[in-house]
Length: 459
Image (cartoon, rainbow, N blue to C red):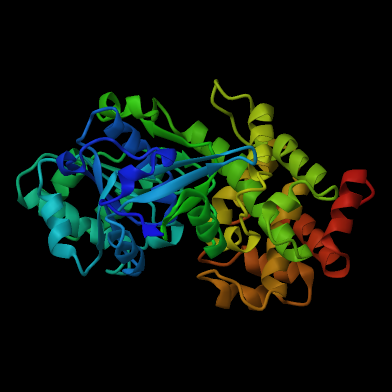
């Protein structure tokens, strides 16, 4: 069978190929972090825009850690398929918004050429929480400064830089990091970034599990072409951005612009991501491979729903247009989608970078509000127990945290692990006794039994 490419994509009418002229598409978006999430999320919105007739928002995607993804995309003329699945039906779409795939620093000359172009309107980012390090020239902040400097030296106007990572106030956070990295604080460049570059906060939401070779093979048999960059995802797709001059162009693509992103961000980070991480660690501790299996497990489901609705959902003030219990039910339905095959191991990665905003901050807020914290304390204890019991943990702080989590006395394990200096948010020590009590219980009792006892009110 043929491999997807410019020469044949229009032949596959069953997968909704783009009809716009790709030769007329201008590069209006420089995206840092050419992973599956970007291709399943932001690129889909920009593809809608191109299909509507606005050809000013083609994407140059930049791989940063390896050339593998960029090379794979170029082998298919940067075309790929997003297959939205919900257990009822498949809705595949060939995406043409990604017009160039580059690798930093190999393709730096072309990346800087795009930065100097008047066609460029925005830089978007999906690089994960751990990539925002300002002490390493190979990480995102220094690279962004290099790109922005090239634009400044060309005398062009400022643009928007939009982080799409799960960081609280991600735009403000990115702005601060970039300004910190610029050493010449009194320079014209610093002033230009400070006053002309816009960093609107944003919130993104779509479940994008890692693709499997079987999924690629099955898709090829069904639709008649080979797509080694195939993405399977859910139908749900949301992008909310703080009010910005881009809204006039981007709203028709389904992107929402709001005065304040923070309430939407907290809703998603706490009720979706906090729930997702909790499920991942519970699944890892009881040998469940996929989170959709865990969320319908009779021992786990009651705990998860009450964690969402009675603790996480009460830890903040939601947006006026979101009903929290309905939102929580929607999250549970999305996570239970059996077609996604989202591995708990994948979600459990980098807990030290994710949990400060997903679980630690809401736990502290609940404590301050005088509200129940026993389920969120259990979730945090599950993470500590996960660190202690797994031989291999994919986390940048694993080497430091695992010995602490394995300390024999539960209170010491909890206080040392959760008090570790490099954690972005520390859990309030007033919660340590409850977390330590759960950890002690988990060390002697299978986690499903502990959850059943908790929901029966017998522990």
